[in-house]
Structures are given as structure tokens and as C-alpha cells.
Image 1 (spheres, helix red, strand yellow):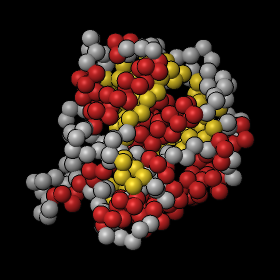
Image 2 (image 1 turned 180 degrees about the vertical axis):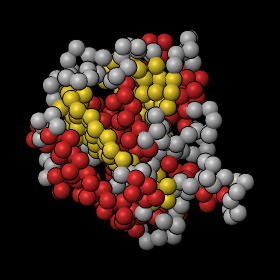
Image 3 (image 1 turned 30 degrees about the vertical axis):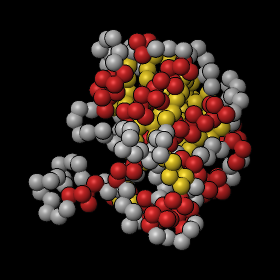
Image 4 (image 1 turned 45 degrees about the vertical axis):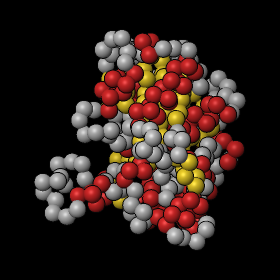
Length: 327
């Protein structure tokens, strides 16, 4: 076993504002059923003016702490794995630390690999237990603020949410294999152009608001992912003598309904062990994988020794896969 790690607490939080595809049809003046037909998404949750992202973080962490039977002062390190920033500076981890207000200045830092941020944080945390006993991993993405509803196929697949995990070392189980790759030929397939030094309010001549919208070339992204993901999964599993039949549960990034359906068909996966929450959550960016993992851990009967494969893609284009054996 390469890296013993256990999840002793997990929590998630959704905004109170439930947004159905039918309500979006009505708002945009579309025929009833249009958005669902284009996206496969029945509903998602968007933050409204009555709450903010910190509310979601606080609620997700509170559930994780209850689940772990710990308090915030039992945490030794905070990793914020959100794909987007609450604000440009300071970093998200400092904001999380201030929100939770531990009695001591425990360290915090950020990890950002967009949709794979939490998976990468989980992998990195497994190497840190010589320094920290209990590590809190937090992700929160408010995708709704950057959606361009002129492109329904893209805007319509996203939802907001937050997740938190508390991890510690274990005497058994842990990460059997982890692998991450970057295929930057797809760098321009998913972008938010604004917010950095390349395009800033001082050098951009048009309406800078346009730079804050998420852009996706879904066709090219789907084509590239379909080409590289199957061999990535196969070689990663084979590196430890594993095959898909050895995996008890598969927790994918909830990228889109079409991508999830394609993975199931392409890899001939048993749907009973495939965690799909897309229809009711949408793509929550960095919170997608831990949200699906939350569903697995709270709705299925998990047994020590079972193997969970967490896998997905990110903007960039990044690939990530971790096989975690339940302690």
C-alpha cells in the first residue's frame, strides 16, 4: 500500500435556491423541456442574494466535523481545493481559516486543478501525515456567476455547491495508485479569460464583463477526452495489476450527462457501481467528485477492502485517477 489514508468525515452543502430546467425554459422564453433536452439536467442549485459562498463552506465543514466527531481545533491543516477564487487575493485557504476561526494559526494553502482540484488535494494530503494528523480539504465553486446564457448547452450544465472532507492516516487501506496527466493541446477548450494579468481592466478595450464568462468548446473537449481517457484509465490500473472488474465503486467527475453516459458505454461499466448525481446537481466543478463521493459514502453499504476509483478531467486538459481502498 503506497499511501494509507482514510476519510473520517465528509460533508456537502447546496444553496437553498433550487433551479429546475423548466424554470430556465420559462425565464429564457424557450419551449418547455428545451434545457433538459439539451443538458440532461433536471435541476441544479444556484446561490442567490440571501447567502454567499462562505455559508456553503461553513455548512459543509460543519457536517464533515460532525461525521468525524471532531471540532475545528482538532484540524492540523486546511487545504482549499476550490477551482475559483472568492476574490483574487488573499488565497482561498486563508479565507477558510478566518471563517472557521480555529484557536491556533494552523497552516492552510490552496490547490487548483479546476475540476480535479479535490482529487489532487486528496492525493497530496496522503503524503502529509508525517506533519499533520487531521487534514481538512474544502472545495466551493459558484459557477453560476460566470455563465453566459447565450450558450445554453454550456451554461445549462453547471451548478453551485461546496464539499468538505477530513482525512487522516490509517493502518489499512489507502491510495493504491494515483496518476495525473496534462494534455495542454486542449488548453483553450475551457477558459475564463479575465481575472489575470493577460486580460485585465487596464488593457482590455471592450466590456470587461465579457471576460468573466466561462467558455467551453464542448465538441473538441469531448473528442480529446474520448481519445485519451480510456487508455489513461487502462494503463493506470495495469500499473498496479488492476482491471476495472477489481473496482467496487466508480466515482467520476460529473462533467455532463453525455460524458457520463459515454464513459459507461465506452468502458462497459456496471451502472450499479457507477455514481451518477448529475441530473440533480449538475457540474459543480471542484465539488463534483467529492459530492458524488458524499453520495456513495452516505447511501451505499461500504465494506473495508472495497476499492473506489475516483476519476475525471479538468480544464487544461488534465486527467486524474485515484484508486482508494476503504480501510
